[in-house]
Each structure stands twice: as structure tokens, then as C-alpha cells.
Image 1 (cartoon, rainbow, N blue to C red):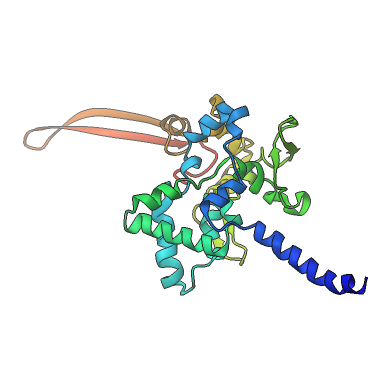
Image 2 (tube, rainbow, N blue to C red; image 1 turned 90 degrees about the horizontal axis):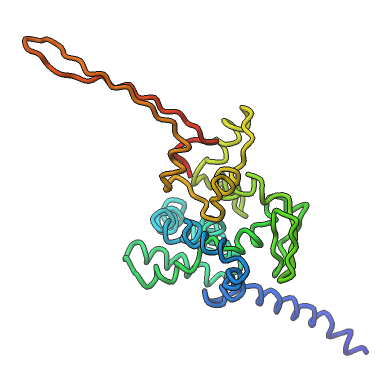
Length: 286
């Protein structure tokens, strides 16, 4: 009994370390096994296929230039800091939330792969990075409780969080009242606050939405326009999609032909163009 009491503190420490180590992956393969999304398409093929065509599905490889500048220039040269997991997550907490569960070593390696893929045009590195993105579990687990973590707590591994009350028998389902609100999207599409307190301003989309749209009486959410309208679902079209751009920008043009006499007849045209922002935020933004 005395030996057991003597060993108990060390046993607790050992178990704590083991659990901590189990929470972090040292390779991208291990990371994606921890958050395997391939089974999602078995029950949700429509949503999965829509997502595959979205920019969320290529959130890393479509943004290599900006992240390369941050990791290769901003952090080491402009701010004179080392590349650490904290620095890496200032990009990848949004572009690939699963990296939250990468080890320090893997997170730094991923930053190196991003630099190599952009600077050296390394196609092998780019292909490996294409496996990282904003996937099903990024929204339906990893980032699901973040807008109200003091109320909802940390996300539970294996639980699927949804904005509706439909409970699936295939997995543990937890309805949350944040996923159908703009503040859920604003986690990344707006001002980002890092774990070290630094604020990242990749875009100001949520700021213009709240300050120039909601404050003037606007009531539609991000999800209303980018998911629900026209059954857009998990395509999440934005500024890269011509149809949604047409909806967001009113355009009229008046063209009048005239002729001026300055020694001879000179044909001219007077063009009046009116542009109207019909979106719920500043255009362009992202």
C-alpha cells in the first residue's frame, strides 16, 4: 500500500504525459488519421461533393503566397522571431484547423513545406499540403465551440456539432446555437486573435459586415447568402464566383454618343456608370 501511494504521483504524471503525447501528431498522415473525414461522404455525399469543389477544400494551396510571405519574411525578418507552432497557427488555425493537433516539430515542418512549395515551386510539397484544408471536422468539431467556448467548452473528440436539432445515430451529435450565425464565420473571415494576443488582420470582412450592414438594420447572415440562398450548400461561393458577384454588385451604364466640332467633327461618347454594393459587407474583401 505504501509503495502504491509512493508511485501514484508518478503514475498520474505518466498518464498525463501519455495523453498529451497522444493528442499531438508527428506526421500529416497521423494528423489526418486523428481527424478522419473520409467517412463523412458515406452519409453526406451531396455535402461532401459540394465541399470538394469549394475553396475551403484547398484553403492551404490557394493561399501559399500570403503564408509564404508570413513565414519566410514577416516572422523571421520583420519581427525577428523564430517559427514556432504559435506562429504557424496564426495562418493555419483558419486555413487548416487540424494543425492545432500537430506537434511542435510537425507544425514547423509544415511552415517549411509552404515556403518550399511557393519559393521553390516544389510540386511534391504542394501535393502534400493539399491534404490540409478546412474540412468537415474543421467546422463541425475543431472550431465549432470557439465562438462561445466559455459557455460550450472545448470540442469533444468524435462529436459532430451541428446548427440543427437532427441527431444522427451514426455518431454523437451535439446541436450548438453558434454555427448558423455570422460570428461563426467571423472567427476566420475577420480579425483573428492568436493565443499570444497578437491580432491578425488578413481581411476586415466581419468588420464591414457588422459596422456597415448590421448597424444599418441588415439581418441576413453569412450562411443566408453563401449557403442557403439558391441552395449553395457547402460550396460557400465568394468573390471567385461570377453569379454571387452579380448578386452583390448592382451595375447600370448610360452611354451617349456625341460629336464635337473643333475644326472638324470628332465623335465622342459620354459614359455614366453607377455601381451599387448590394452585399452585406465591403467589396472586395475576403
